[in-house]
Length: 151
Image (cartoon, rainbow, N blue to C red):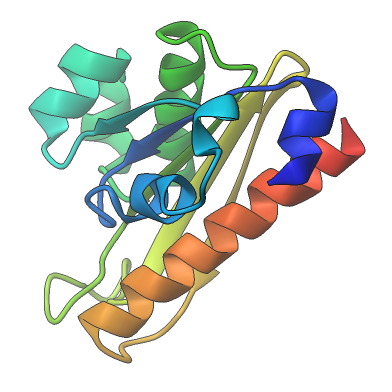
């Protein structure tokens, strides 16, 4: 994550379906304390609301696995940290838990910087919990790298 260091940025994570795996991937690297400020593991809706300020109305209207919630998670992590960038993930890793409207393997990502908040959804498919979680980590780190390089 030299791109974050080059900008003098710290980052924060807000994780649901990955349960801390993004934070772990970052802190596995020597020197990560120069770029990693903190992580929020908000697996339950109550944790999303209490720790990140996600609106109960947003959760009720869109559900936990939505870009709206991912955006609020990212914005909340940014606001509740000393970071300049926050990445958030919420999804259905499986097995099970999916529905016709929100299938297993769907993950919503939110990324917040001082420039604003973006979000996207990736359909990894029902390929197993481990694959979905690892793919989520990789995609989140790619988003962070892209944002840090773009400024």
